[in-house]
Structure formats: C-alpha cells, structure tokens
Amino acid sequence: MRSISATEAKQNLGALLDTVQHEPVVIRRQKRDVAVVLSPREYDRLRAVNVAEFDRFCDRIGDPATEAGLTEAKLTKIFSESSSGCGCSRYRRPGYPFAASRP
Image (cartoon, rainbow, N blue to C red; front, side, top):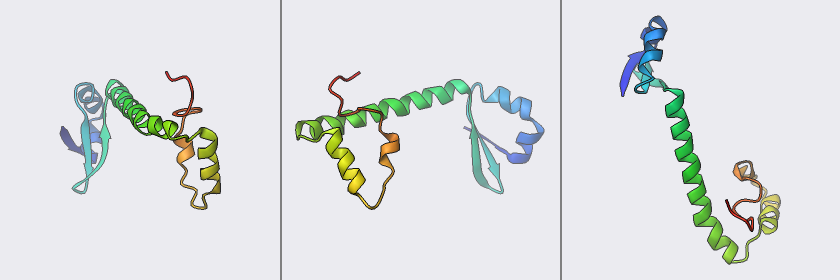
C-alpha cells in the first residue's frame, strides 16, 4: 500500500483520486498514519466482508442460544435489567438471530 504525506495529498488530489481506483493509499502526517483513501468499489467489498462475518458470528452464537431456550424477549429483558447499558442492541437487526425464519 502506498503512503503519501498530507501535504502531497492536498497538492495532488487528482492524482490521489486516480491512484485509489487501483490501490488504497495511506495519508501520513508527522510520521503517523492519519487516513486511508480507497475506491468506492473497495469500500463496498470491505463492507460486504464485514456483513458476512457478522452473519457468521450471529449464526455461531444465535443457533446454540436458541437451542438453549434463549429468546429475543429474554434477551431484551436481560439487556433492560443491565445497569451497564452496553449499547449492543443498536447492532442487532430486528428479529435476528432469534427469528424463526432465517435469510
């Protein structure tokens, strides 16, 4: 993966945009990586990989939990009684992984 300075990125934005169509580019400021620029196609590919991995995780965890008798109602009750408020519910898709019909 190529690296360029933030100054070089500002001065050569057009060339940077051309380059990222073929490979991601790391932008560095004061010897630290501060950003990665990539094409929309690569971004979509990475998002799809993450969604697929999340689905595999839900299957790995959800199936045994359902078999053990854990329902979405019980899980909601557990989270609502929790004082820590982990925020996990914002990542859970409605009815998944405890829905009867799976995609």
